[in-house]
Image 1 (spheres, rainbow, N blue to C red):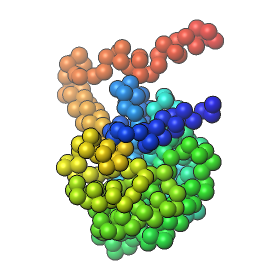
Image 2 (spheres, rainbow, N blue to C red):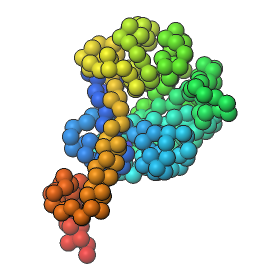
Image 3 (spheres, one colour):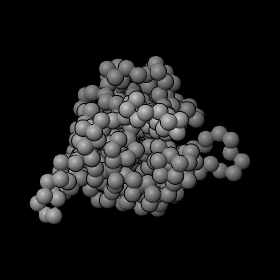
Length: 284
C-alpha cells in the first residue's frame, strides 16, 4: 500500500460516513502527535496557522507554497493522522493551483481545499472579494487534473456566506460540485437557516469553517451533510501563551518545578524516545 493511502482512505471514510467530526488544529509534528494520541479523526493545517508557525507573520498570504508544503510534510511524516490542509487560493491562478496540488499530494496530505477568495488582497481593497465563478470553476478543474492519487480529497472552498449571499453561496457550491470536487468547504455561515438552504441544494459532503456558535451542534450538523466542522485554531495561541508565561517566569527567577510543563514521560512518548533508543542499540 502506498505510504499515504491508508490515511487518505480514513479521511474519505469520514466524508462518506454519517457523523460530523471536529478536526484537531495542528501546526507541527508534536501537535499532530498530540491530536492523534487524543483520538482526533482528522488534523487540520490552516494557512493562517502555518504563517504564524513558519514566519511569525499574520495571515496575509506571505507564506510560499514551498514553505507550506514543507511544513505539511513534517506533520505528515510524524505520525498517521490524516491531514486536511487549507491551501488558500492555490498560490495564484489555475496553473499555480496545479502546482499546489502536486506539492501537497507529494507531502502526504489526505485532503486540501482551494478557495475562491481574491488573494492576496488587491490594491485599494478594504473588504474580502471573491473571484468570478468561472475562474473558481477553472481552479477546481485544474486541481482535479493535477491530482495523481484519486484518494486525495479536494474540496471547493468558498467564503461567499460571509462575503456575498447565500444565493451566491449555493450557486458557487453547485458549480464546484459539477466541476467534480469531493466536498464543499463553507466559511462564515451565520445561521441554521442558511445551512439548511445550502444543504438542500448540494449533495456533496460539507466542511464548515468560521461558523457561528449557533451551528456548533454535531448531531444537528451531521443531519445536514456536514462531516467536518472546524472549531478554530486555539492550540497555537495556547502554545504561545504557555511559552510566554514560562519564559516570563524563568526571567523572573521562578523555580522550574512550579511551572506546568509536560512531564519527562510525556516528552519521551511524543518524541518516540524508546524507538530511537532501540535503533541506537541495534545499529550504534
